[in-house]
Image (cartoon, rainbow, N blue to C red):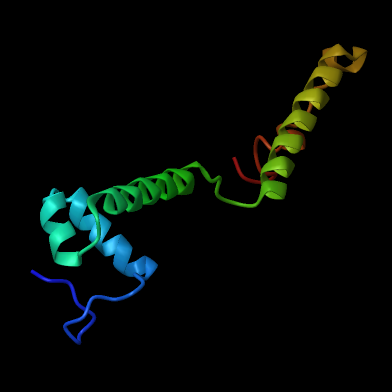
Length: 112
């Protein structure tokens, strides 16, 4: 099957979308030589496209999702709560008065 741009001619430049479609065919097991002949793109270039595609996919999976500031806020709140518990446990009052659990976000006031 010959790859064309609708006018029976091969494109001078391949779009990223079209390259991705060709790479997906390679990843699905189509023959490299067959795709190379159909597209008239050398096998070495097709392999370079495949490597670039997989590297991009790997980088996409390495990215952290969510807002970094939000992650830092959650981490800081946890450390603050831990520090408050340690300070309370070391104080003389801790022997006589139980610290409310909602002070550390462990439970919501009024909801048991």
